Amino acid sequence: MTLSKQEDFQNKGVLKLSNVIDVEMLADVQTHLWQEVHRKFDIHLDKPSTWFSNVNNPIGDARAKRLNGMGSIMRELKAAGKLDDIERAIQPVIDQIFVDHTWRPLDLWYSLLSFPGSESVWNVPHKSWHCDEPAVVDDAKPWSLFVFVFLDNVTADMGATTVISGSHRRAERLAKTLGTSNNEELINAFSSVNSGLYESPKDVTLLPMDQVLDPLIQEDPWFQKLIQEGSPDQRIQRFIEEGNSLHGIEQKVVTLTGTAGDIIVFDPRCLHTFSANVSNLPRQVLRLDFRRQI
Image 1 (tube, helix red, strand yellow):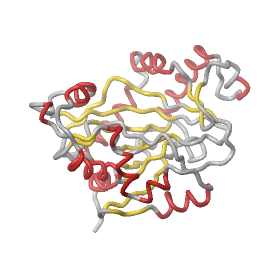
Image 2 (spheres, helix red, strand yellow):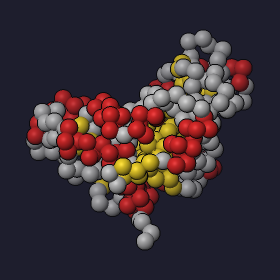
Image 3 (cartoon, rainbow, N blue to C red):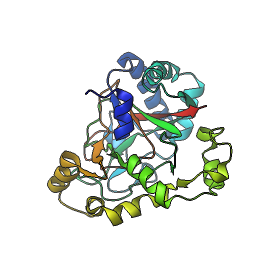
Image 4 (cartoon, helix red, strand yellow):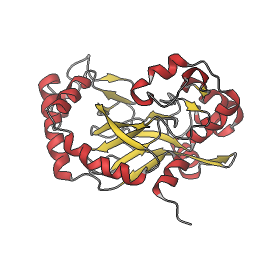
């Protein structure tokens, strides 16, 4: 039986949708984005010699470098209406697939632009795995959807975000035994995406984001190996090609790659991290979040 896109997303927490946005529309956004990057940072896309001329920016580690200060550029592009057409292209696709709830975009866009680091060989990351939302008992849906928008072609070696498909379901399972109530402070910290969802936030049982990975490591040798260093060939085979299954939940490391015009929707409860950009190109990806409404 062929699963619907919504069912596939519920199982994996990751859904790739091709050719959602017109490439000419993206090219216009790309032009404005790089004009602002040039104005603010004196960086030219087609002049690699300018990428790292400022010792204070981009910042990051050996895996990849990001520009500190992109938030103001994204706010300016949003205020100027430069991102409106992209939002209008994405909204009906979200409506068509995620029919159980109404999802609406937040006003804030994120730049995931990243430049090459100093590593030379791509590998499955072994550190910085994290979730961006807690797992809530008896609430199978996330508070928000992360939508990655590809302004240009992105391959794994360009520092693609890596996600463990199915890990949101592992977090849900853990929450049933390890979750706690009286987490109003945490719930309120996410008021932009969860306001109105719960009549009594103090009675909501959930597993906080920073309490997901350690229990998985304790019960699952696959996760134990995930956080250890290893050769690229072995890690790619084990975590991307083979994956694993436990408690009836399949899990694999998925690289968020695509071509210009594609989008990827992923569940922020999934464990994810960034990988090394070992290419000679910046990764050009934007992120728009959609909140679940009552």
